[in-house]
Image (cartoon, rainbow, N blue to C red; front, side, top):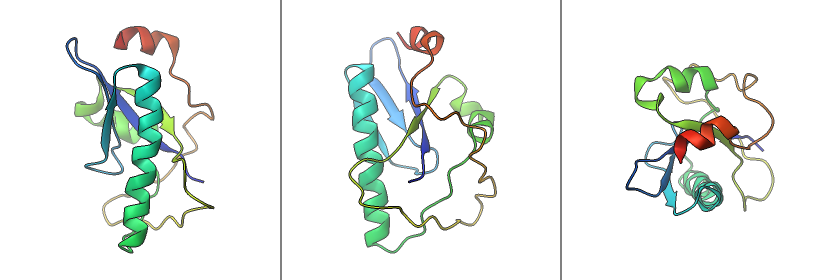
Length: 121
């Protein structure tokens, strides 16, 4: 199963929001950081299931470097989000315009770095 990068966003007067740069429009939010992370995995799985049903190409995971190079993402905290609830592996097919497909630079754990977590609080 592929792991995708989710971006956690938090404003002073908001819940924890999570978006997926590889899946525009796939977003969720939670009152707590743990809830946001759990809902992010479910949201990602639903997005992927919908794409499979529609026979759309599933993008290769972007690298952390490519995602964080976007100025719009610099205030977010990146976490790995393996989609839950999907049976078996998904077939990842590259999309046009998504030339960055190297996921080797992302660590194996999906925990939020404690320093980054303090920044979100």
